[in-house]
Length: 123
Image 1 (cartoon, rainbow, N blue to C red):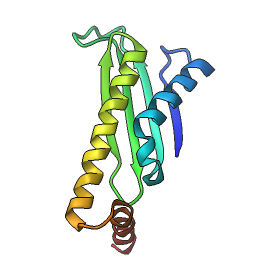
Image 2 (cartoon, rainbow, N blue to C red):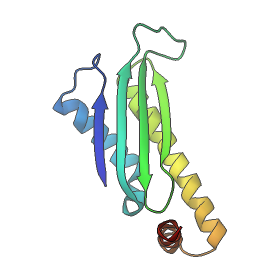
Image 3 (spheres, rainbow, N blue to C red):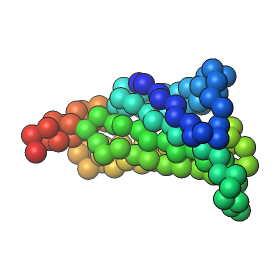
């Protein structure tokens, strides 16, 4: 599973930030790692646009084999809180999506994802 970190011009990207994102995302979704090819993480600081739920935004998009990409975002007062919040949301969203796929096919999860990928390539 590849994790790509992207920042806007208002956030200074450094190795510590990349490591934090890698650690949080991996911890949140490691149980789905065999089904996820890539996670895109977009970090931004909306200082110019004051909002009630915080200036920092984290958007995460997971690419799942045989399934549509799943995207979530979180706003918070600090960047670390936004990253943690988005990772939790992503975990729940993937669990829900893959759970529906499993329920629909009534087969083991890995087989359901594999069958969904086969259907997608034949369409």
